[in-house]
Image 1 (cartoon, helix red, strand yellow):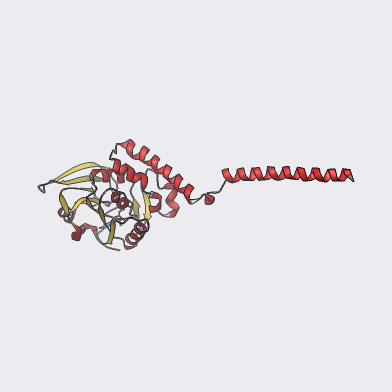
Image 2 (tube, rainbow, N blue to C red):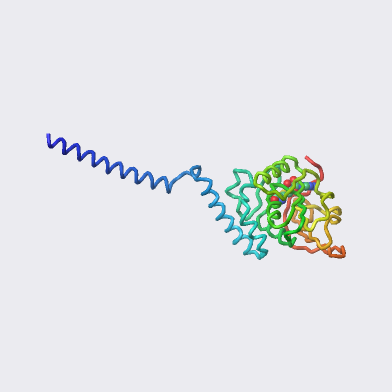
Length: 257
Ligand code: SAH
């Protein structure tokens, strides 16, 4: 009788040990081997934040962009939320990414370079031609007072407008239309950024640039290497054009879809 009680006690103790071992290893495996769908939103945000800081250090600051406002804006803006979900993991790579309708979000370095070229200031009013995902507009909006942005492809323009509203960018206004003609109603602009390539600089954009203002625009034939140009209008209204570097952009279209 005593013996069987002793045996039963031993069995219970052994099982406790087994249970403890099982519990210990399953917790460890939960911590270290979780599938990605188990990561919380907070961990995801931390992960992308790390990638953003790395992107700014290695792709942007390392290539000579020094405007702290530009660097900070690009550290702060969650670029992965501007690309299709299946591309989010590549959002901080050193390349452009497709955003649908044959269009692309520019490479992070080009976004930074074009923004820095405009020498944007906090009281500036900016115009963007080619809203696309809305990312470039978001970067500019962190620095200037107001951004007007025009997109020719209706579903892209609508999606960008919704995204920017939901993300709380209150100083950006999106319009669907042909940005070749700028946005007369809100002109003149301190800065104009064109994110699609044209074979010439659209005269309406030169006209809508404020005296003392700057415009960054890729100029050249579609589907070839183009030149990124910086157009500067002096205080007296004289135009000076600088060739910055070779780039490759999607073409500036002329027919609305
Ligand atoms: N700045 C965008 C990337 C732009 S890709 C971003 O940050 O995501 C170029 C965009 O210019 C495309 O969305 C294209 O549809 C748009 N576009 C082309 N021609 C245009 C035109 N005439 N007027 C306005 N947008 C135009």
